[in-house]
Length: 161
Image (cartoon, rainbow, N blue to C red; front, side, top):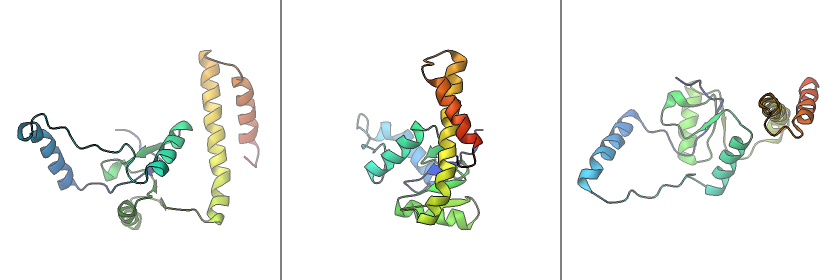
């Protein structure tokens, strides 16, 4: 079993167990009921396409510990970002039940942003340090990796981050 991710991006409500069973049954019998009929097109990024794409691809680019639209409650991260209304209502219920620790939706309040930015910057430096160290250890494309690692270490050791 994989470790629980830190963050989940949730753009659609999680299906109930009965809904998942129903969907699985439909997938299995569809070839017999409608042979050769193509499945309906699904968006890679449900919800507001540009917003969801930028969040998901940005998190992937920095190597963040997150998942996107998991199928089960047990796969939710400790923090959930839910930009879609139905997913937000479901995530709020999960927060009230204690299944998640933090819920974010929409714009962030300036006080929260000021508190979060130093932490996010430190995460970014940690990701940069990890990538540079891996590149140096494997001797792949080490141009500048030592300098990035030195700057990351200095930033992580400082109080400011």
